[in-house]
Length: 230
Image (cartoon, rainbow, N blue to C red; front, side, top):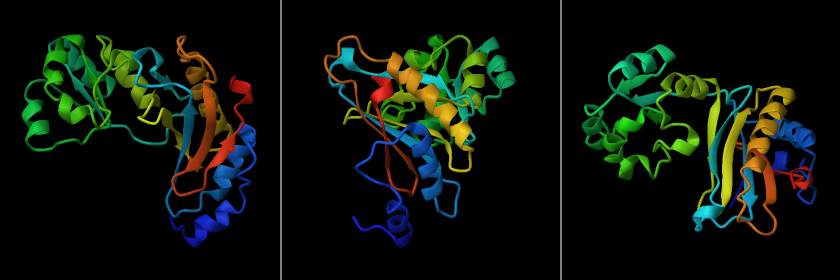
């Protein structure tokens, strides 16, 4: 894979043989984010889990204290009083059955997170083939299947992010923007790592966190020491 001049210059500042302390890694990622837009800072965590086994799955959500820097559009499936509740909480779209053809037939996907009350999961289930592969299916573990739609919407708007293993047993999560201060990124990183450490599956034998890498959208990866996280 051929990289551009900017990336090559930025990569020279990173010693690939070193696992940096989180604060140093964050400073480096900010320094090497040289794109013309405000790059997203992401954490990539390679785990020792085998996601093919249900008891070794990692899935959950955490509210980043400083948000992600991104405006998140929330769709809520609800009925009755919960419709007004979702709207009052700041949901971008609220509805029920009438949204199914719009998503199924018209390919409408102008939302980033889907919340549903439990009594609407029968309706939402019909969209499984569309929402599932995009990671948009509401899930009780992530707090997106709930009767407390006010809390769900407010948490998401405040910077709640979901984490889960991908097929390679890696967790990929945004922790903010390159324009954030180092302190804000550090606080978000710490909140995420606390949640990931607590989410360690009890069935897992051996090393849990194999590697942690921080990177901006267009920048080089910077390794973070896993020592603190066990």
